[in-house]
Length: 490
Image (cartoon, rainbow, N blue to C red):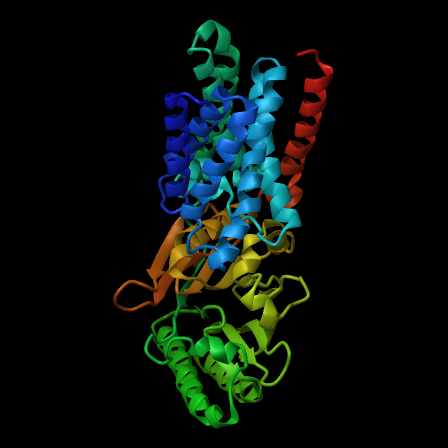
């Protein structure tokens, strides 16, 4: 039977984890893992791991509420494998770490945590959602490690702190016993934070910029559920004319707004994901209008389009169309990663190749929403020497902050400035160091247009060259650690 103190630490860790998934308080993540790891170590494996799983399940139930695109029984069923995955690193720490000496024992937990996150991102459809790294929004010096080893370095740092602090805690902070593990971990984390601070301080401020605007849809044009029915192609012949008139007003809204922003000085105008819905047979005429506008105003239009094929099994094309300042369509890209469930059931999937095109302003790359949650996919922009990444997005209120954070990391990893135009979320722009250049909140009162000067040009990063090598190294180190633990006498 766990002691009361242990139960309290378990509850404290679970509470911190549930809260940090819904807020931007980076320190809570460090506290959560430390408390949970301490409680896990104080209990026997037989009692501890089930108790830990139940705590993690409850924390995820609170933290993920409204974020996962499922509800009801499916939501609670999906939490089972997620909480099992979260429990695995604690199991490795409980069963393997005590069999290893000193500092080596502290590396099992962070390696296992990285391995769990990374393998889940590679072999399931969840991408990098749920990574502990995304709780560190605002901790820019630490976030810079993503330029070298991806988000996995941030995850490793948070988990390593927890395992080292817990080791010291379990020995009553006796310095003669824990000195070496604490010094090694402290020196490494200190070097990461110092290096990140220096990287930020040395970032140039004289890079050429392009004035960029994002615009959003009117909030009062469609009734609830109407845009969903349109995307699904569920339009009767009787409704076709009425809904076509609404869509025509929507098209005018975006073209008029783009002309306004162009005449105010913007050179690049970005529309959110599937914000402009259009029937397939109306698309050619609309694109001609958009091309004339771009040519007349000498502006680049990056348009998030949702093209509807009525009467077909997969009725929806989720597209990014980029028109250059000469009025030429230079990119017509279909989203490559469909969100599981509703979107996957209606959407035509692209070929998995991220588009990069040369323009007078530099090389522009594009991806759409969920695409940008896959770091390996977005690396294509860096390897193709892009100078700017454009990401139309369609969020909802519960995920607006975490998704915004995820795309800040894509800017750091690739060394690319990034513009995201978000329907029902945070339209924003980041420089190659992940610093926020501007934000417009769809849910805030007033105008939802974002206008910002975006620096053009890529900053070379190690991650863009080597990809997920560090994450694979953690997987390998975990295997080696387990083998060493059970070969070595306990």
